[in-house]
Length: 203
Image (cartoon, rainbow, N blue to C red; front, side, top):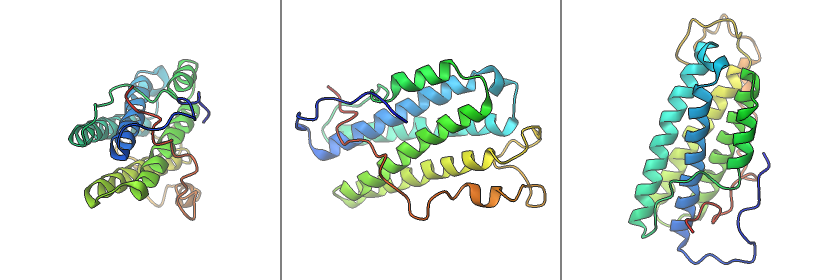
């Protein structure tokens, strides 16, 4: 996903590293909450696949909890909470959601967002000082990666089967063969799409 550059590359961070990464993590979670909230109201979600509705509702709740957790942590670290969505991606994501007309495109966008969040938290876990902060980023990264996996699997399942409400919500006998590998796109989890540490800094 492309977005607008965040800040000037010549500007040096003035806040402690912990504050910067927590604010950026919160900004990405705010973006996810905003995106899932919009997604929940799209007509093809409201009237469509029950599995998708369940994933949208559950993932939104997770992202809201993550944003709150990151903001509590940033306050403890001496910084200001970040309640705005990530500025690098917010406008582009809003445009894509506004023009969205089908579930496959929505799942693709949400998968991209989950990947950015997971890769960012994975990278920040390696930068964080202190076991508590590292554990926080690792735990959130694992949840975001799970979201992405389930969204990828969802794309392989029959769209007409709305009987299940708990994703992936299908039995091994009825699942297509592609579902077994669709959710494992990487041999090693990447971090190339991780956000810059000061991308979501409160300014």
